Image 1 (cartoon, rainbow over the protein chains, first blue to last red):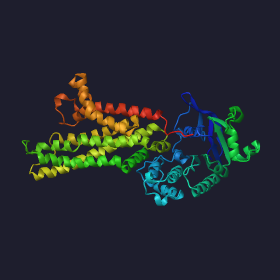
Image 2: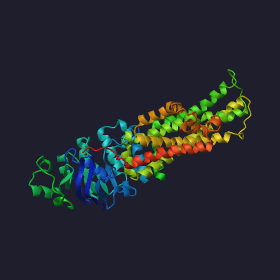
Image 3: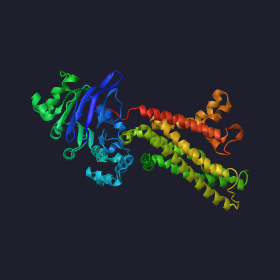
Image 4: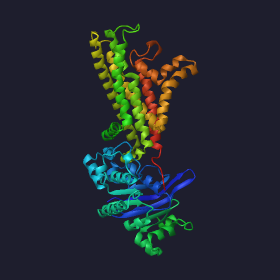
Amino acid sequence: MCTIAVEALTKRYGTVTAVDDLTFELAPGRISGFLGPNGAGKSTTMRLLLGLAKPTSGRATINGRPYRELRDPLRHIGALIDPNVFHPSHSGRTALRIAARPARIPDQRVEEVLHLVGLGSAAHRRAGSYSQGMRQRLALAAALLGDPETLVLDEPANGLDPEGVHWLRGLLRGLAAEGRTVFVSSHLLAELAQTVDDVVIINQGQLVAADSMAELLERTSASSLEDLFLDATSAAARPAHPTSTRARSLS
Amino acid sequence: MRSLVSAELLKLRSTRSAWIPCAAALAIAVVAVIANTSMTGHGGSTHLSPAALPGLLRASGGQIVDGAVLLAWIVLSAGEFRHRTSVTTFLGEPNRLRIVSAKLASAALTGAAVGLLAEALGAATAAAALSAHHVPLVWSQPGVLGAVLAVPLLAALYGMLGVGLGLLLRNTAAALGLALMWAFVVEGIVPALMRQPGTVRWLPEAAANAVLPGASPAATTLSAGVALAVLAGYVAVLAGAGAALTARREIGTTTG
């Protein structure tokens, strides 16, 4: 089983601190929601976890190892960071075949994930002609290529229609039920409330809360995830001191 | 590494803006030989003779093939950042130097393959054209083997130059503009600015011409071996700088 651990992670761009001494750990078999206002540092944290950016200090690991040290990472961790990461002139099928090659994933698996995400009949079309929702499904297919134990998904419901959101919820639930770690950021709080088991909330790059959603709701007496989020990230709310919230296991 | 090279070659095969220039260069290789053999003997030019073969083989490769392979790999390397496919690429293989190595190997393979194919097409067309003019074919004459070896070798180096330039600038238009500016402007004005005409032989295009036997007057160029080393030096500098920047730079953009 795969575990994601973020330890005292800090990322600075000049004078701007995008991620500030962030520490949390995700347990397998659960869906963890990653929440925060725009610019809170969610995407930066995910990019640091995936080795697309280097931390100023601290570390983010998957099963104790940084992403850059993983051999055949697609078989361990699947990521959706941005739906617009496919060459517009490539067909959906070709885009996935290119993504699959480095991990020696067979073309048969490409066809499987294309059908899984509902793009089987559109696989021959150019990715540039896809709608936002179709590109999102293609990016999700790319994340699933290696049948990974862990999924890191940045705003996966963006651009999906209600049927797509419903389908995504079922997919994530099914993946977590198989024991996989699912880490998902979203601004769709009502949707997320129906999907996630645990939440990690950050604001201004710092950890605000990290626990199971049920415990957080009980502890704060918030009536919903939306209330919890707004309370935690309101202007008056200061990020929690790292020592009070860090290293909480969400299991 | 083989799987990474396979991925890079699949990108080449499935990206029209990359393979069309290579296909066009192959078509031009045939047309260049036909044009050369058609014009020979007209307007005061010399008649076709067996000695024309090395020149025809050079005409079928040379700068057109070099330029096409350079263009293809600029498009593929800089395009990774333009279309953000670099995110998928570096998620699949987080060791960025391995990715750069795969791109360089793929570019070299592409150059060698397109160069060899251009020479094969050029040789077949030249054989047909010379036979039609009842000119005997002498494959063993000086310059033939040199052209057949030099064209693929130069195209391989130009492909690697394209990778280096594309990774360094990460902007397709800027990289293509710089390559064109260099070929058509910079190599022409550098010797004039430096007031030392001899310096031109150390520049990439002049060095490439020196590698291709008989393409330039021997007195004004480097020896083929030195010219090859000079070109390899340009490749090492550009590819090294591109690799260093690729290893350091962050991939993708942040939104929240």
